[in-house]
Image 1: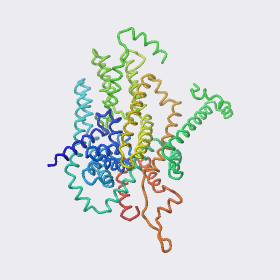
Image 2: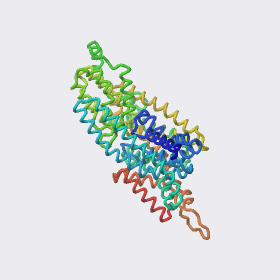
Image 3: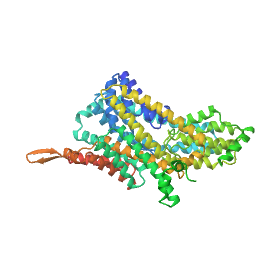
Image 4: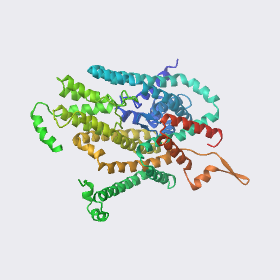
Length: 281
Length: 285
């Protein structure tokens, strides 16, 4: 029995719980999911645990590039990013420390076991919700805390930390053997899928934002600025703020036009911006 | 109505019930920060995490009134879902409403916090998710990734510090703002004049995620086209007249599946896996 690996795998598993979207310990999602759960941070943490920070960060960097546009909206997830980060990077750090392997493992784990575990948990936790409703009906405050917070978190810890620990502790040999026999076509399919995944996260966000198909023009503008004009992302944010502000100004003008029903007043109102900002009524 | 509230406050203060103390507000803030996703399920999402968050308020106002306490827990247990960090705004508004109810202000009905939550969670989720997951996080991460190109731990450390500081400020400001504004904040978020503001954030978010699509989706064809005796990769030809054509097609196709075909994310993942598999097998991707 390899005690060092046992504890290393356990630590990665615990971090895999702390960085999960449904873990409460790290200030909810604020310091957990959105900090510890990011692959770049997971790579750094796994680097510390496996005593090779540089290799860890490089693995994290490669995995982060794939999952940078991962979205978690309305309870659905485009990928299970925490299983992917800690399972994939942890397993890679325990074996080859090769960033390419980390990416392959992360996508594979995130899109299969990760999503299955996540969806089962999301469906199964209705059980605790019903218990919480019953506790309120019986006005049992102590039971409410147990059923809404304590028990669900214990289950979440088990569902998150144990599989990651097991995957790293027992998977080391299996992964090394598997990498030797796996056909190159499978790895290239996983790589292509990794490149495609951001499209899903972005489409989920578009679905929340774009109500009118004409608004796609803003999306295409942003796309063109990066793809054609080769602008940096931060530069695009500044330009987007400017355009959004102009749209805000113009939409106010249109509103006052409609209420007065006189197109001629538009120019007169133009000089009285203060009145437009505080609503006419 | 706001005027009436102001007139009633001093009266209510003279009577026994007083406003929430700083400590109690902090406790509601922290519970909402830590707990919303504690027993998350598709059926209820944040659900009764609200009830647990408002127990400090119940302990203060309804110590000797079990029925009122129970109604408080009950009205904060139905389905609720929004972006939890910027969602502190709703928590602040609800805290100010529940405080009025607890102090016995009859102008604020017990349905009001429920209505406020139901009408705010949708618009706020759209804005919050696009600001946080669509703009702030990818931007900070891409800076961090630049700092870590050679494997330096500087990038992760930069992200940890900047995001932790920014998000703490965002949560505190949202909660305090919501608490101060009370119901009047609702008009600011879903009222007629707020449509302009929402529209502004939508434009901002849509442009930035357009850029995100161009910089993150990696899809290249491996097909080579014969040019006389030589072959030229098709990808270089495409890049010549339309860089990022394949990623754009991919994201628009995925968007169409979700918005027009109303497919779930899980189904789309299966379709994308199928596309990747077929693409690799016919040697296109």
